Image (tube, rainbow, N blue to C red):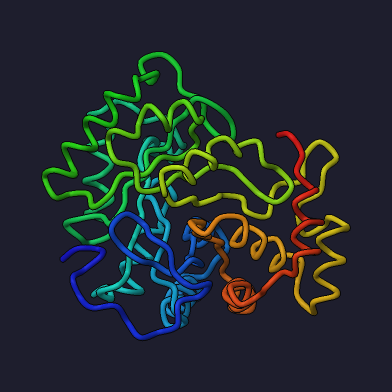
Length: 301
């Protein structure tokens, strides 16, 4: 069986509407499973939130074996998988014998990671495999023999796609130049750091717009750093949320959905109330004046 299956689309309401992810239409509000692998999240709570997300219309889940137990939790909660579910996995890093996250950028390592993701998810084909480049922050930086040409990596993933192991190829943490270089390989989506407050990746998003590529921002609420708040603490975001009777997080997510029709969100949580808020953000409509005020918040990275 595959992670995407071959069934017809479910009649469930798609949170936020739908957009294309490769050759599939998925709900624009998905779910990121990384948080479920954190220490302190009870197993039953993790399984419950995954089932609740799918029940409420989520059909795009972001995962990776190097997140820890995320893949195993997804399998335990959802297998046999709904026919409309797309599970996007990620490669480019791995856990060593001590459990530490280390680079895994070489082509043969990418192949091993794809196979490991398939095995832990219990599928024979991944809907999407995202290649996480390690050229720049946030996170690991590759060095030594882990500095690998992008074309070599894409050739390996394309071979796996041709063999039926991968449905679509995505990129994560890339520059506009790298995305342009990768276009001939056929890129379904790009995952980059991006939020209403931090739009250093706008040139990458512009290229996604030009080529109708799905945009999957990670840290969609931003990060508190160098004296700058997260989006949920920004005065403009908070004021708009108060006027709408919404949460600041919902406003920040709604702005991302409005900014580009190909945006797919993957907020993660282990809290049912937060899951409900995230899904409800798909119904929040921002007036032109609110959008203008939020657009003005853009700052260089």
